[in-house]
Length: 331
Image (cartoon, rainbow, N blue to C red; front, side, top):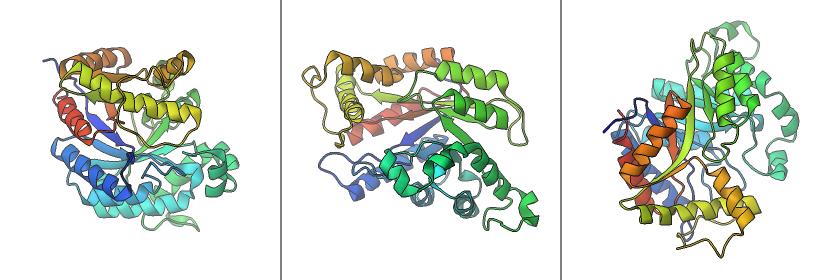
């Protein structure tokens, strides 16, 4: 078997299944986290989402703190903290505290989007849209709080000052590619739901990258959906839960991820199917052998330094099976 010669990581969306609840979901996330830790995955990241009864990751920093304490080796991070929702000073203090507790195991992925709808964005931060326009300035402010040079400032982050937490820029657009290349920071692309500009964004990032005190060469990571089962039929069946979940997102309906249907033909029309399948075009579904080949082909095309997977399915056992199978595909 030709293995992928890059690290593999995992994004957990903490999805609350139909007929489940937040407590049960976070118990399952703990099982996933500890399995990833034992399997030597490089990172476990949590996304920030708000105003959704079916996602348990609104308090991202709290999840990072808890699951860093439940694991031993794996890096724990945000995929990401939506910085316009927050004060950079508070983020610096919180991440500084985490880094003080868990040393070099903490990552900080930063995004510009609110992670929710427009009304909730305003509830999170009355000046959200102004803050979003100032995202580059906020990132620099956060870096300043972490810097030892900030020792002479009138506003300082304790804990936080002097820590060395890797900052990743997250995105799905040319804006994020431009910012991360200009600032000399690692760049992670949300290919798992917004693949359209991925190749273009990575090409721009690599060709315009400016070495910095944080990074001397371009570093990229792509996040993709991966669902592995013992048979192709079973994998495709489990994937139907993912497709239906994204169909609900497209329609603006708020429903929990549900058990897979045998077919979605009666659920969506041709236009909706095409739209959802385009959103999820970087989804690798199948047996261990077929997914292994799909990931090899993908890496040859995209040539990233790291791959992050996510497995948005109803079945907890399929998530566990997927991460075990996928780990065998990487060195």
